[in-house]
Image (cartoon, rainbow, N blue to C red; front, side, top):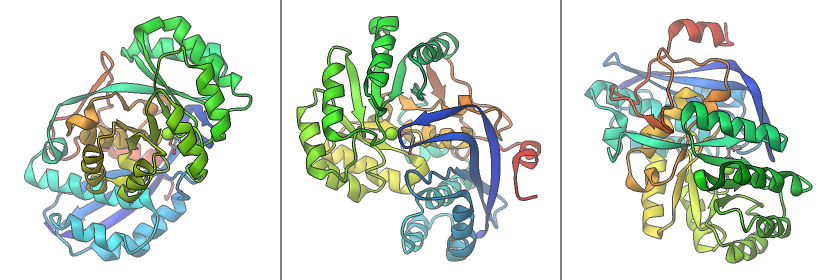
Length: 367
Ligand code: MUC
Ligand code: MG
């Protein structure tokens, strides 16, 4: 069960249409495939999505830190020494997506060696999650049309609407159009990616007070400490901290500081080992959890699904599991299928997916 090598392979898969939001936009999945090789023959796999606008990581940087620092630090350890792996990677600050992909690939390899699904190893609470779809910036009619397609084709009934534009009426018009189109048949929440100030957020939320929102997420920057506390105090819905809480310490600070009343867990930035700590912390603090999407491909989505389905708290709300639908292709032999608004996790050992070697050959950018 010893780790013998860690590979970091860059690949790029174009998006059919870009995803736009207040802090950036994504036109292609320029991710890094991480493979952990073992002396047992099993190879664990995960992917790291660079999000420079959120965590500062780039595709080149992820490869450099894995090849130069993390691989030498973990080769020779066994798949059971995941806490040692975490402690060694923690000596390097930042790099959350790179660390998470190494961690999840190790879990995948362990599941394959033991013949067990990772979702069961983590907690095994359920075999499925309800799916929430993220609607990126566009005109109201186009965003309503996309939601209609998601309802009709995939049975999805929960939508996270990207907001944070100026003027805010660009966004409030979309949320109103969605509520008018679907009535009470859908759940709606908004994510500002820090695009508004606290005062702009408060005004926009007042304007949407009659639209029965489920949550509001990261409308303004957590660095505006008092402004955000002032905003959160006056909201009638839970305020999700997303990019402000990549670590358990951040969760503690934001929640105890009353700057957040719910949190997003993203396996792309906290892997399985740290996400588990964050989950237990959220349970102890008594805050709702939404499984978020770091604009993941299907491998990242399978990771979110494995973790989110493992616990009651993480499976209570719809998880953000559909961004891969915007991609023109992916790396898996069997694509994930959203049916009746749900994604079911695989019962195969490990995280439960297989990479198609021909697709990897086609999309890798290092050859
Ligand atoms: C989200 O929930 O914010 C956009 C930026 C990011 O870091 O993640 C995505 C989705
Ligand atoms: Mg967010």
